[in-house]
Image (cartoon, rainbow, N blue to C red):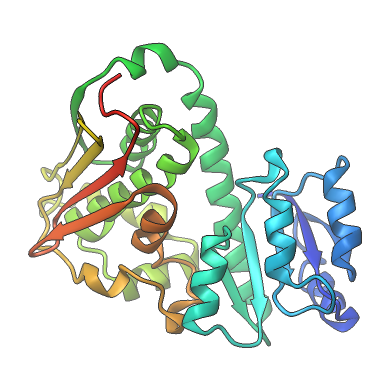
Length: 299
């Protein structure tokens, strides 16, 4: 997978290391040791697929830079990888509230950098494709009061989440949470992929192929998950239920600095921060309700 990577770091040696790590990869790298200069270029015609951003820099730090970058409409959903010497829970929460989804703790290896970049680029490609779909059926979707789908595959998740997101006031924000919760129902719910297994699969680049493999196994082949959306008086209620044994969702309801450098595990917390006003799971963890307040529930 190719892509334009913009790296911003006040350390020349760190930028050189990143350049060396990516030398044999199909990425175009543009590096800046000054965040103000980087921001000026982004306001111009520089449009990265991923931004690799240092947290601590003199003058404009990474968070301040990110706030300014998010004001540029075309970069609002560009994945940002934050480099940091240490990530406290407060820093993780602050970064995620500003749009950081990935963290790299310095020093990091080439393998870790490539794994995080691969996931960031995959996510960006998915969301760009789904957002294109979102723009196609506005009027009809705004008139839907209730709908119910069953789903099973990653393709189901992508198409149905894009359809449902269009019914929300800010579809691009809603898409993040809907897709993450539906993915949980497939991978952790119906297919019983554990957190540790998912970490290993991502590191090996085998996550999607393992989902495809498990979908054909006798134990999982007949399992379906269900998602329903209803407009209510004060907002939109989304419920998702799978046929798995449940999971310890409470561990992932907030940001945990100990998992900050994992390439996954922030879906529920992200959904709370970006997409919904409330998320409630019922025991044993295979049934969730996500609620978004609106000016009026009905169109």
